[in-house]
Image 1 (cartoon, rainbow, N blue to C red):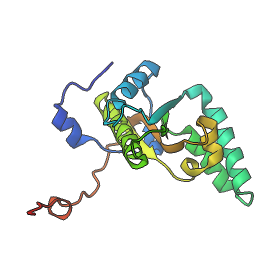
Image 2: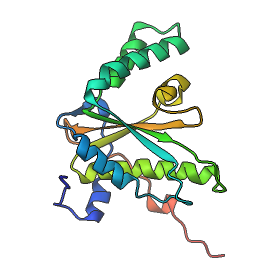
Image 3: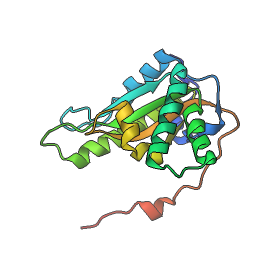
Length: 192
């Protein structure tokens, strides 16, 4: 494990940025590092200890198969698709050195579905924090592939949903800071 030990936990939180997967390059994490990141991601709030999320690692040698599956699913759902759209599916499958598909996998329980969805989002965010702590950059993408039942079926079951595709690698150029909301616009004090 190569934790970025040059910074404090607060600095890690303050410096995490999302990277554009198409701009990520090698090196990326190996399988052991990915498993360590997932172990950290699983340390998320989880009312009822249900683990309503799953992580599917797509190894580099499966990227051709991912491209074929995405292309076939896209063509089946959008038969009028043009060459550029199909190329976009292939490009999506090949971005960044590493890829983890996060699935929302709700469990039958008295725990409300909404809480399970929140836990999945928190687990995905924890994965991004773990990626940063290991010295890599991550990008969480959704889009058409995350809403396609055909794509979902390639990774999971009918009751699951794709929460996102987390691409991981090394930033090819410095990450840009995006505008953040002003604290006074998003936080208030309730006085009763």
